[in-house]
Image (tube, rainbow, N blue to C red; front, side):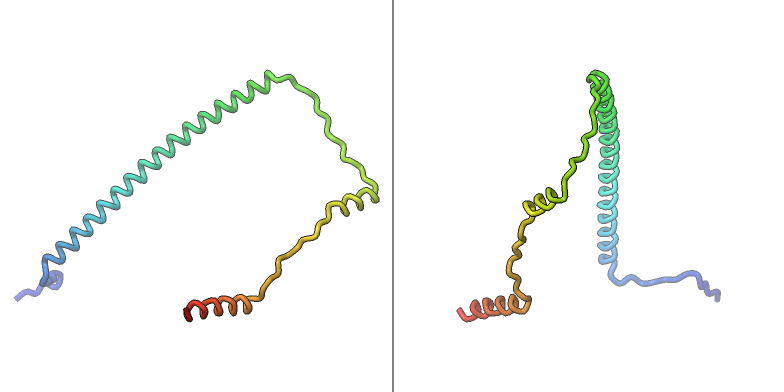
Length: 125
């Protein structure tokens, strides 16, 4: 008698459950493939839109260059910084100072007690 160790047999008790699982896996794999195809089409559309946007941007840049060529050139001088005396700086600083009023802050413990008291009042009624 020859025994083949490579062959393994397994008895399947409930064939319908296994078929159901295989069909569910097939359905899920088809859904994944459909999602993949949707993603590919979205990527293609994105690429086409990027090409269109690049084309329009280059067209706009050409128009801007044409406009710059048509506008007469003017010599613009840089503005000189204003010079203040020390007294002037102090006056400006005093005018622009403002007091920041901070709202009264409650400690977390007091807020917790307030919330607990509200909760207790709701439970009573």
